[in-house]
Image 1 (tube, helix red, strand yellow):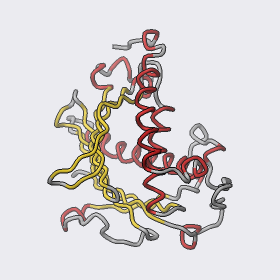
Image 2 (image 1 turned 90 degrees about the vertical axis):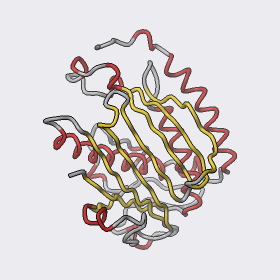
Image 3 (image 1 turned 30 degrees about the vertical axis):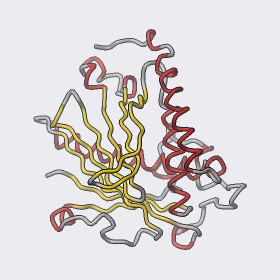
Length: 265
């Protein structure tokens, strides 16, 4: 049975602020994760207005490369190290679909998100069907809980437990139950459905997909909060200009040292 998980992430900002913060954090993360032939390639970033609504559509390719464990690289075909991501950002509702050209219909990770001005108390923020609700597992992510962060992943500069914003005065989030009384507050409701159909390892890989998504959400939102003084005060026009500049720089970064990378396939 496919795992359906709903992650609820409380944030010390408003719903309107989060829209800017999220886009800024995605651009910054893409830059940090790209270089030497690996990372993010942005193919499309354009408005959409169709039967499903309107918003911003993006189409990206992720070149995983060395992000795969070293022992597995010789065993994995080169084409399997590439993932495609399509996203429809009709904020406050967003949908992201990640697929693998190599695995085709056998691999698909869908994330649907709703952003609400509450403390994670809405029981069906994404209007799931009765069948989906029966499968759904709910998990709260506390961005300030350092016990969930490995020593290798921990960065003092991205620690909400110690960070205090100079521009807003928010933080540090070092009080037990901070999410219950902090102001402002909003919640990201993320429902993740991960499908991986490969004989013999499906039951192992699908939980790993969920574990990886949880880690990504945790690290992303820790960085987002600790970058408050960077994105606070930006407009949507500022962010779109940043995205355009970032897309150009990503091409340059991926090409840097790309020819010197070892090809394991």
